[in-house]
Length: 156
View 1 (tube, rainbow, N blue to C red):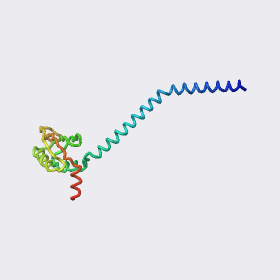
View 2 (view 1 turned 90 degrees about the horizontal axis):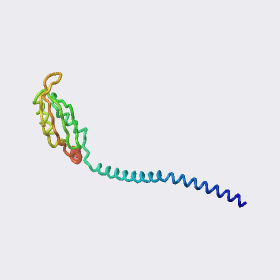
View 3 (view 1 turned 45 degrees about the vertical axis):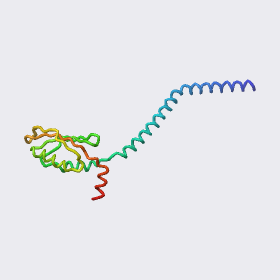
């Protein structure tokens, strides 16, 4: 009986040693998993903070802004490019068949409530399939619209 128990105990020690070796082999993976869990927790906290900050930022009504800009364009003016930086500044490049079209566009944009400042950076001579054009580049500073849009909509 003692010999059978001794053999059984030896078998158990071998299994324990085998499991211990497997556990030791998995130790680097467990350490890496713990490290990744900590990084994930940190990233989730940062994401939460950034989302909270984003909610506090003014949210421009892009559809309204683009609508106002397009409605300000005389018939002989077209845009080739519109780029927005940081939600606060925009650059417009385009052309017109006449100089008056460009200056009229600038004048109309000065009346757009979404545009705080406008600067005509330059004009140049161009050519289209239908004739000579006046190319232009405009820099716009957009108005901070979050609070103002809410106030305006209440008065409508």
